[in-house]
Image 1: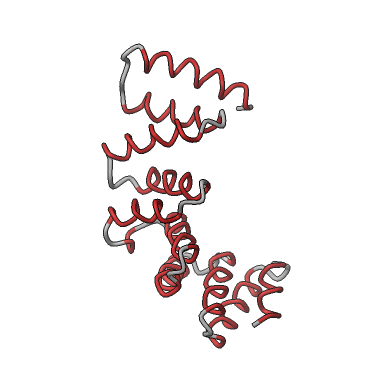
Image 2: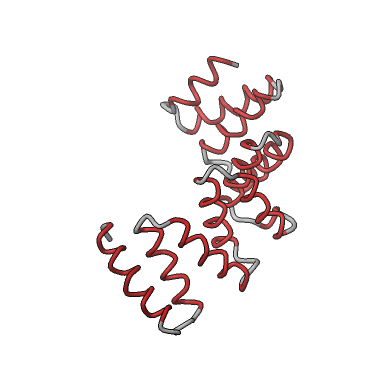
Length: 169
């Protein structure tokens, strides 16, 4: 869909919502349309309400966390992740977001543990090795950082950021 389609969809779905047609599906469709139309704050309110109804929904949690992250509020995004309890059961994409948030808030030990978990689930993902290597380098764990960055380059030899970090470590 192009932006104007999202605007039209948000208006149409918003009218249904305002008219009292409140269903979980409509709420999510409206939130997606609002987000596509660039109305992040309104979308976030609907996503948060949907998450209250289904607190264990990892994909929905990832969306809410991503919105808070885009608003420069990784602390609020992490608060949502804390509700889930054990992050070991999260899918790789959500673990990656969690690791990003942890490193953005300066919790490097937690970010390292999270990225390690993600790498164990998706060992062929160069980007995960890169992220792990970057955080390891920031904490002075040079040997492990080098190994992780080399693994990223083994998987994706022309990965420019991995090349740059490897040169710095």
